[in-house]
Length: 130
Image 1 (cartoon, rainbow, N blue to C red):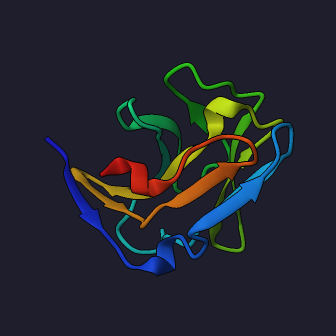
Image 2: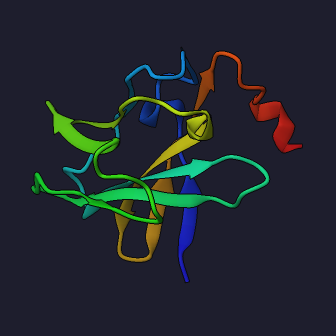
């Protein structure tokens, strides 16, 4: 049982990132891991699929683990100056959708507001979630 908690825009300041297929994209998460949180994770949502867990990393670690068939060669997680980044290399059409960062502490996952990755030529927009 996990408890999800949505948080303010401060977690994910960019609501939309636009790119072309084949571009490299970096998404930003300002989750503060200096408090009780033990790890940072990123999730991907693209209807009609369910929320997918992409990658996670423990606090104070430089190593990350990629899940769910996502490629470690294309999806990378790194931290710089207290900000957590998800880097997607050589974007593909299946990469469009909404990306959520989450700070995890025990059974609590504090989720950011999400960043929509819009790839030119791909018809996806968060309003399709309705």
